[in-house]
Length: 194
Image (tube, helix red, strand yellow):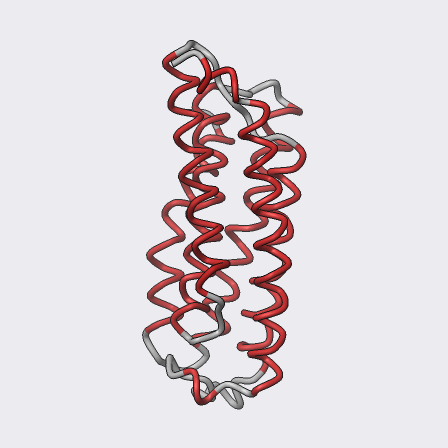
């Protein structure tokens, strides 16, 4: 397994640690969650740069890199969802889009094709990562002297943070929907031939 693919696997490994750091309350737990999430998000950029620069682009990377991105980003959204900062419809849009694209990728593999992430999909992932990084950063900053200020109960969160997350979630949801429609349009031939 080459280095970019190892970095891709690293993102999958980050998911349970992100959940643990976010949901188990200990001193500076939001700071730890932020650092884990930042490492995972930075690794997304790093593996792509290394793969292209060293000519290490593989079918495994094309398939698993987007899945690892989805795993870590959806984990972050589910953590925020658990805090009560959510709109159910937005989460449903995100999940539906990811299942649609994953299904199309599996159909493409059966046809001997590999659907790599396109520009719209990368923009969607970047926007989702920025939104969630900001949310984790705010949570980390609100920890006073390492004490748990915002627990897993939504009532402990400031109202303005709830407003930020609601607006940011909706923006992400719209971009995610448009990204899914773009993938559906580009991969329609895979559906039409069945």
